[in-house]
Image (cartoon, rainbow over all chains, first blue to last red; front, side, top):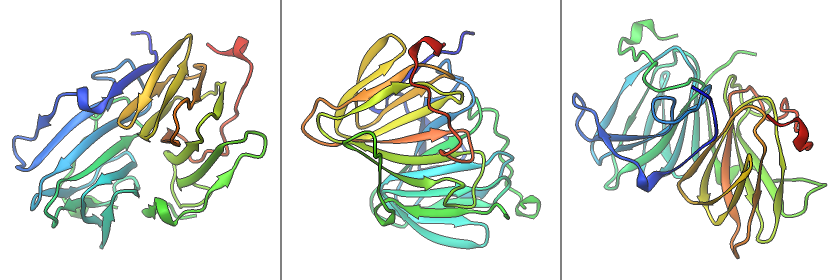
Length: 130
Length: 130
């Protein structure tokens, strides 16, 4: 595949749900599974009020960039408040998750230095986090 | 330096200006020059009404993620409209720039798969773009 420029508009993209985790939905904005991109991937995730993104870790570093709602991020052994305009750097194999304690959806972008989200192996065992 | 998690809040960060280019200002959110991060860097740039981010290219791929205002992105030989929620994938050495023809600031995030923005070599010669 020739790698070339891509433009997407968030409202035009389809939501996907996570069968095993209620209250989560996501879209791929820039991702080699849907755009002819490589080396960076970008998606949008929404956590419904009361829902949780279960803590996990993975090999690549990641950025979370929040754009609406309020919640708490679990990051290593810390918990921090997040809201629109919060950016979080998650190092390689750092334990992280999210809780939406508010009454509005907690919406953010994830960014990986990978071609795609689908190549990330999610690990839900804290003992193997670094 | 030990690479560890980082959290920043956009309103709390200092604006920088670009001496040679009027109407631009920027902030570093996640960047090894200001946070103990690596492998991903994230910054915010604002283009004032009427201002231009001059077309250029560089070795790493990049993502632009727009969050307010309206404008036009130059991308290779194309021009596209951008607004809040537009994501743009810019391949390696792809010619790109921005024009704000609106009456509000055009605000977006840049993302590189690099430790920092400062390591990017900007090239303003279109003939060397791929």
